[in-house]
Image (cartoon, rainbow, N blue to C red; front, side, top):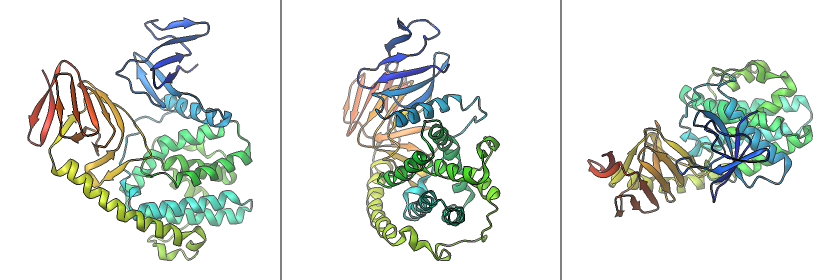
Length: 377
């Protein structure tokens, strides 16, 4: 069986289905209990702890059986990914999905997938799928964009697809879930790190109607959409433009375009604010050694090639624990994080606007060329 922890996010108390290697958990009948160390972030995730690969799920669990199954199976899948051959799925920057063009084309793609999910006519389904593919091809104008999207879709998309089909839903319930999930997704602040939860489950379900058990043919080197395109025998012009898609209006193009143009104005204002905070003013830069992070994937802000602004996050590392409530800039290569300059400084606690750093006693704060950093004593 797979090692799993159910954790109370307020108290850090947890219930486990097995003991650790040190046999230090307290046994209560068939379960084990203890408290999660402060050095480990609480999140729905798979993680290594003292020689065991654990699945962590936060309490309370969803009351709905299907949603609960979906959540637990998704995280269990992550704990088995390496054994399934999906090793070294690195993070990539999908910041283009926070821009006007990227968001517009993703929303149109998902609207086309919704249409495909809503019809039982396979000929119509195929037409809607072709349109979805075309919107994606216009968005993926470079190999870099194509690769970065596929990395997240292999990671989170496949986990979500697997958990959906093992959740206990029947065919109609799966379709209803996918349609409702896309509608709810449109309400999220950013698509940068959450789009794969929508695209691959929807594509995967639709592909299963045409090409059967496609998921048995993939590996860590697969590009999922290329596989689908080949299997469906789709053929597209080498150079596509939005104006080439004559029937885009049936996908709510006018309304989506208007709302995304309005959002883009606000994004430009926020971009200037974050550039001032993290690129033009003194900052505290923390370099990662053994970083562990938890964050909300639905409120991120991409700052071009500099990295991504995380409005809220919790990071643990050799130097201590960083808790952020008003923004931090995580570098695009995931090697460091920046917060605004410190305002209150003591040996063990450093605070700034919207953040605090609990510093381990073998580290100290020092000045640097760009503001501040921490250094091992």
